[in-house]
Length: 421
Picture 1 (tube, rainbow, N blue to C red):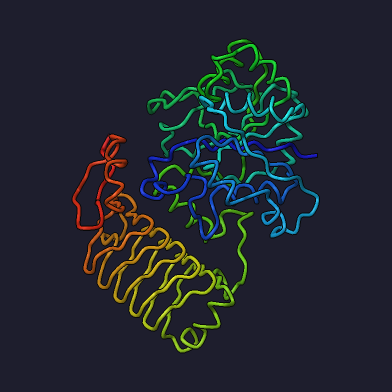
Picture 2 (cartoon, rainbow, N blue to C red):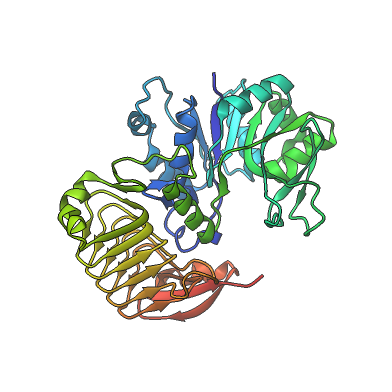
């Protein structure tokens, strides 16, 4: 039997601005499906049947509960009948992921193993293997670890100190290059034994964050904590660049459990309602698809459009002579004629007016340009790599974070960029 799942989903998501100004980070679209729904699908398809969302605050809780409700639609789409209703953390102002874990285990009286996942991660893990590993070693905690290839930076992660038996003695947070104790990083994918309830009770108010407080307490006090190497795909979707990478990886097939329906050709998927509209122009070559392409339902695409290695969200309008390459266009977008989009993210319900251009240095440097939800981008606009665009009404919220520099405004929008740190 697979464990119950607790998703920690209380973060503010400022690094993903402007995509998280109107919605929680876990609900940001990844190829027409919310990030957290993609994660839950991986887990449900392998046997998980009970999901608890450790949400905090009205924005997170209400949006997530409106999206999933009791979970009937989620499980029905997967053809799963033997499930329990989705549950949500009550109105409790937790002070971190460990506090949420303590509260939810007590509130829902969880006395079995519990899988705790971060709602903004995408992991393609073999659940049966980690469950068997956990049952064999019987630790208080098994942490899924991902080995980072030599040459790839691990300075932004928590890096594990592990022995030859994969027992963890601690983590080094954001180590300097050359000082890391291993190449194994924390994926924020945890399998806890029920004994952790007693540990959390002992810790009291000191139990705030799982990574920052609970795990150090366990390792420093001799509790068994083990690492389980993850062979499959994993990504922390915390920035536009990582969201973009996740979308490209889903399109290319790197994410094994990603749900791709309605195959049109090799590496290309088009919903039947859209295909019925555009099939004559595809056959004549008036619409060209290259590489890995996914197009959602009820889209209108006009002649002269070229789409390469990109996702187009459902109910989008793509006018004539548009070029879209290495990009993700979310649902209800309207891309007017002669627009060029290159290695960019276009948010929901956006209008890109004619002759605009996003990311025109071939995407080589400078980050992913992002146009936020409900933005109308004026005609002939040029949005350089790394530049983000949001509605002007959000300017105070954006600048108050201290993370971004304002580049300019127009009558409707603010243009900003992350500060160099």
